Length: 341
Image (cartoon, rainbow, N blue to C red; front, side):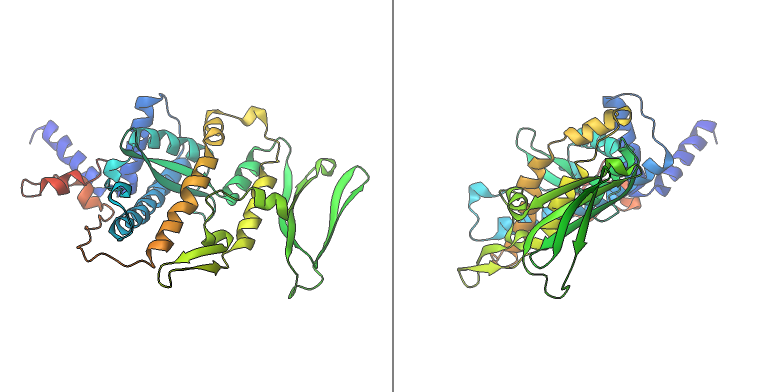
């Protein structure tokens, strides 16, 4: 057996042993180098990228389920239907690779709750799906503490209720606060919230206060009732019904974002990845996709289905699916649906 043939067989075996996330990582590195240039990432960042595959794959599946459901309801007009499947084959992989590398370089972990979320959205110009990355409040906290201009001891975020006692104390060139929960079983109504940044050098301590009015002003224009509360149309009763939602959690996240964004970042640590991640149009994803997609899922769960056969759901690629050569017996449609990484 020739050396070339041996090397070819060894390469094939290695390729078959790679998991889908490992192949995704290899694709990301290759695309980034081809579009941007030199790439230096460590093993931990590669591990984060492998986790991104899992997070993005789950996001694509949920979004595809929502697309299929929405197209199936009688109330969906033909011109409002989205006939482009939300699968890996229809994702803008060039832009995704660049975004993945920059987020991984900052240490954002998609496997940690409230760190980083993937939001697929359709780009009508390219007829592809772009993947937006929405930083959760834990992700913002991580960036703030890691890149702060001054070392941080701790960050506290709290909501204030009408029966609580809260006051700001400025003494000896240090900002502090007194916060007392007088009745934990009946705290009253939410009146606002505060964030407290405690530095190693306590003279730099900072407190951020938001009234309920300030919190509500930051509510997305397309805020879903399931999250923020309010009225929602019930397709079973054909009436608007009041939905309690998770206002407290959303308000706390709003105060947290304002607090973490108030941390002064060390300009010496601001690199290309930080600039890319921070300058991404996050508000666009918040207002038009994150809650709107979830709202569609919740709405569709209450609607009457058309009696049609539901399209087959495409499962996540297994290592065998990805590495195996497609045989002549495999239908062309199935071949085209497989990820090319």
